[in-house]
Length: 252
Image 1 (cartoon, rainbow, N blue to C red):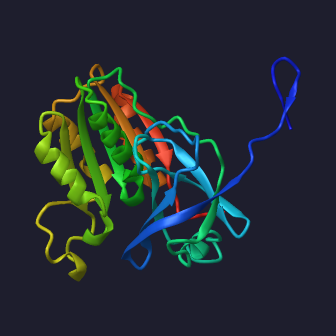
Image 2: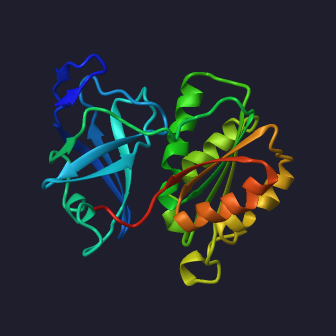
C-alpha cells in the first residue's frame, strides 16, 4: 500500500503479464524483442519499462515511440554470475510471457528548450534517442536539430544504423547521424569506411564542426558510465548542460 498526500491508502499498481510478439537476433549477445503493450500503458519517448521473467525484473528503455502498438526493446546479454534476467530473456520466443509493471518511468526525455540536441550513445544507449526521434517525426515537430553520435566496437553492434541513416537522409534539415568504430583494425570491421575512435573522443571535434555552443545546445549521454563521465568532463567546464542515462552490463 502507498499513502496519498491526503492520508488515504491506495493499492500499489499490479504487475501484469504480456506476450512476446517478435524477436530478432543481431549478434550472440544483442537482440531486439517486441512485447504487447498492455491496455492503458502510456509513456514518454525516452522513458523505460520494467519487465520480468522467472521472478527477476529489470528496467529497459523503450525503443518504440508512444504511438506504436508494441513495446520494442534492445537487449544485451549479460551472462551469469552478473546477469540474472537476460539469460532468461534469451530463452524467450514469440508467444512466451513476461511480466511488466504498468507504469513507465524516467526523466531522460526530450528537453525542447535548446534548438540543438547533441546526443551521444554507446551500443544499447541509442535506444532513448531512437524513441525521441520517432516521436518527434510522428508529431511533425520542428525547430530543432538532432546530432546523434553512436559508438561501438564492431559494425554489427549498431543495429539502428540503417534507420538512423535513412532518417538523416530524409530529414537532413534536422537530423545528423555519425556512427564511429573504436576497433577499426579488427577483422570484423574490415568493411568499415566511416569515423573511427571512441565516441566520447570525437565529441568535441563534432561539436566544433557543427558550431554548437552552451547557449543553444543540450547534450545527452547514454550508455557506458565511462563514456558519460568523459563527456561530462569535456563539456560541463565549458558551460554545457549534460543529461545522462547510464547503461551497464548488469541485470540484477
